[in-house]
Length: 87
Image (cartoon, rainbow, N blue to C red; front, side, top):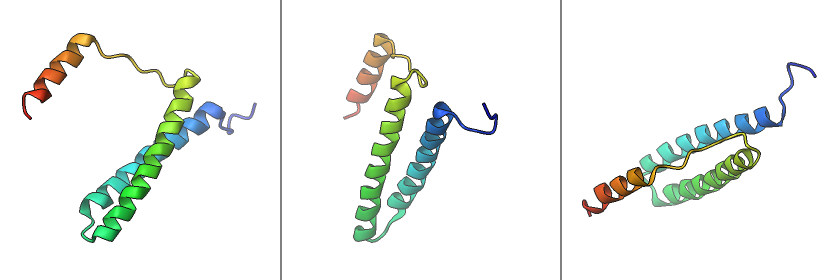
C-alpha cells in the first residue's frame, strides 16, 4: 500500500474535519449578517452543512472509527437541573 494514499477512514475523517471548519465559518457569518435575506441564506447553507457533517459522523461511528461515551445519568440529571432552574 502506498503510504501517501488515504484509506477510507482517513478520507472520511478529513471530510468530517473540513465540515466542522465550514460550519464554523457559516455560523460566524450568519451571526453577523445584517440583511435578513443574507442571514436566511446562510442559515439554510449552515443547516445543509450540518446535515453533511452528521452523515459523516454517523458513517465513522457506524464503522467504529469515532467512538463516543455515554454520559453518566448523574451528570445528565445535574445538567438538566442546572438549566431547568434558569428558565
